[in-house]
Length: 211
Image 1 (cartoon, rainbow, N blue to C red):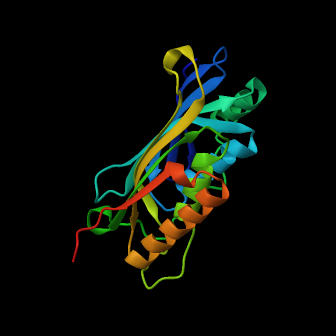
Image 2: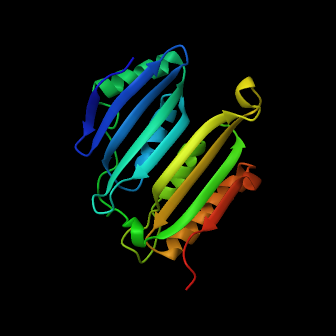
């Protein structure tokens, strides 16, 4: 099943690209004005509907335009997927989307961090990572949040197509306006991973040139 685009709020458009009831999955695409917290907001809405992210891609577009595009495969029970489908159709999916209060981060000159995670799949991984990245922090920079420049996540089986343990793999580049915010993001991600007992599965690397 493929349907047309729906405008959920003045800055975001959602398109349901495919709804596969036999696979219990719904693929939707979003694009609009970039701002901190948009990934966390969308993934938290899915969690509230008892759905999880089977795969995700997020990218920023031309630097001067401050636009993002995102695709998500939501998976879960048929009732929850049908509810999501109808919410998008009725233009109710992002009725409480984050406002454009914070200035978008100009990523070509931002501080940059790379995140990699490969761990046995569990609910809420993307939601928690994006929540930590988008959390407002005290800093001298105009924007105390981190923001994704690129994000890709995928559920896969360790044994290949024939099966095995389900793993979730994530790769992301995260921008921030000052090194203080980046360091706080790193510390918070490491603390969360340690508490979730996946600390050995998380890899973080500073991508900034040495001064």
